[in-house]
Amino acid sequence: MNNYIIIKRLFFTLLLITAIYFLLLITNSFINKPVIKDINIMNLDEINISEFINQPDKNIVTTSNNEIKFEYKLIGIRAGDNDSSVILKKANKEYLVRIGETLDNNYELVEVLPNTAVFRNGQKIVRIEIEDIK
Image (cartoon, rainbow, N blue to C red):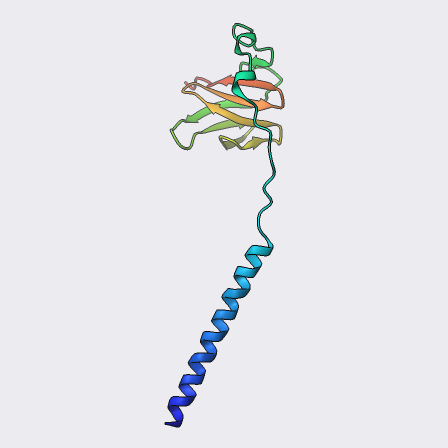
């Protein structure tokens, strides 16, 4: 009978400690609730699309691999629906860059097409074509 009371108290103590732990977790989640900031969403009716149609984009710079601005050569492309990447070469080093990653903390890979890759450097967009390897 004495063992039964000890086991009962031990089980009750473990249950009480678990309940206190979960109560502390719930209290902590209420205290650290996320801050929801109000953002101003632009009404689509306010946008005048006709201003932007038929205007050439001044920020797009099409480069070939021989130009000095972009020292990397595009030697490989892996285009897919979910995860696209390119293989670039500079001097003797090769780099694998996925969409969204930056190259030299300057050029962000934006888009991968079958024969070209599009990088963005701030406002400028650089489009390079794959180098034909023979």
